[in-house]
Image (tube, rainbow, N blue to C red; front, side, top):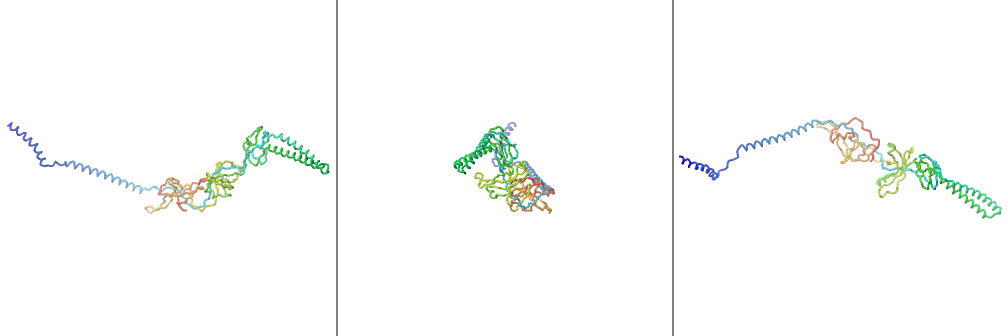
Length: 409
C-alpha cells in the first residue's frame, strides 16, 4: 500500500501541472477583468459629472441673481449743476507779454571835468526842466569872464572913438576895423567862458523823478560820470512781440490793455504807436510798441507786462463755462444731458460724455468749435461723480462765480 501510494502521488502532481499546459496549448482565453473594477470607474465618473454640473449650474444661477439684483436696484440719480451752451460775440483779443520802458529816461552826467562844490538836489524828488542839480568848481572861469567883460568894455570905447574920428575924416577906416575886431574877440571870450560856466552847473534836461545819488561833495567828476538817473513817469512804453502769423492783425492806433503783477486787478489803457517794419529772422517775431498813461506814477520802467490788444469783433461763437470741460490726453469732453425713457415708460435725465473741440478761453468761458450746438444742456459742476450714461438730477443751487482773473489762451 505504501509503495502504491508513493507511486500515485507524483502522477497526480504531474497530471495537475500538465492540465493547464495542455489547456493553453489548445488556445484557451485568459480570464476577463473583474466586474467590480469597471463598476468603480463608472461610479467615480458619475460623481465627477454631478460635481462639475453642480458648479456650472451654481455659477450660472449666481450670475443670474446678481444681474437681477442690480437690474432691480438702480442707484439714485446724481445731483449736478447744468448750464446751456449759448451763442455770443466774444471780444477778439490778441495776448502777448512784454516789458515797460520810459518815454524819457537818462543818466545825468557832466560835460566837463571838475570838482563838486555843491549838490543841489534830493534823491527821489520830482524836478522840472532846468532845475540845478550839481555845481562844479568854476572860480577860474568866473575870473576869465570878468577879464573878457573888461576887455569888451575897453574895446567898445575904442570902437566908438574910432568911428567918431573916421566920421570926421580924422582917422583911417583901418583903425575902426581893428577896434571892431578887438570888441568882437572880447565878446567871443565872454560867450565861451559863460558856456563853460554853464557846463559846470548841471541841470535837469526834462521834467521827471530823480533816482539814487551817485556822487559826493568834493569828488572830482570826470566828463561822462553818472550823477543821478532822471525818469519821466507820466507816460510809458509797453514793448512786446507777436508772431509773424499774428502781425497782420495789428495796426497803429489799436487799443491795448496792460496789467502788471505788482497791481493785480488794475488795468492800464493805451494805444499802439509803433510797429517795427522788419520781422526778426531768428525768431520770426515782430516788435510792437504801445504808449500807455501812468496815473499816479505807479508803474516803473522794466516791469513785466501782460499786454492785450483789442481787435475787431469776430462772428458769434458757442461758449460754455470753463468748469464744464474736462481736459485729458484723449481729448476734451463735456457731459451732455439727454432725456431717456426707462423700461417702465418713465422719462429721466442721463449724462452722456461728448467729445468737443475747444478754442479760446476768456472771462471764465471756453469757445466750443465743434461738438455742441446752442441750447444744449451740459453738466457744469459734478463731473467727477459721473460716468457716461449715468442718471442725473439737476441741482437748484446757483453756479460758482467766474474767477476774476481771465484765463489765457
